[in-house]
Image (cartoon, rainbow, N blue to C red):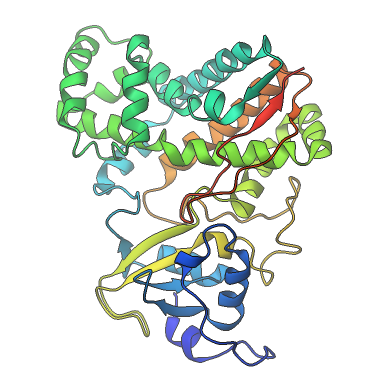
Length: 367
């Protein structure tokens, strides 16, 4: 259990005197890592007034905060408002449903990768990462292919895991679920329709589309960027694809798609009063030198990356599952279709968002 009182009032033994109070997170958009180091070393728990939240930055403290029942998902942090939908989807994504989802990821990845094979250069963010999670959801659910653009827009603009706030999703699904109930098939929507109301099916589909949204695409972009920046490691994965899961976990540790996860205190937690917002700094925790050796280095074969990027506890399984499948099958498809895959020369864009960080452009040679 997290003991934030001790974290706040007891400095780490052997550390030098505290520097002046650190600047706000809002000032560290382009390069937050120096600030993360200051926070971990001298201010492991501190209130950031401009940001409006208590900041927690050390690995052990962030992990504990994410699992603490006194700290619940805060509005606007991308965590579902209806956790029962996540739990239902987690139970549904087994057996035939999981097989359908996995097959859809693999099929979608190969289709997108083959489209790039005829080109000499491509932008993996715009032409692969942004579309693969949506294409997977459309194929797995058996939705009409011509509706891919609309489903993609729902995913990218924050449809939400529970389907709430998007009544058009229910209208869109109603005739499809009626047909599946009359003539079930092998797709995921048929599985989800079994013994469930239309309202529940809408929530489950909304949850899956939420998992197929921006965070999964950003995580995939950072994963591919890390491997392209380390071509020798990429070649090892080409020869030994079974190591891909570890390489994905390492990317989540070093470059998570969400650097900040917000929680709200429903009761006092040490120095944190009830009702306060707590910012769990995933980006800082993943580079904590007390937890990881040489934490700024990307090592696809690190024995224990211990990622926090998809949370440590409630309401995360479907997101983590789809993201992992997307990363593993996405990489395999690219390596199979693009034997000369390597990063193209040119300037790299700096991130413009502290909370959600990933490459905006990922130019590659395909041959």
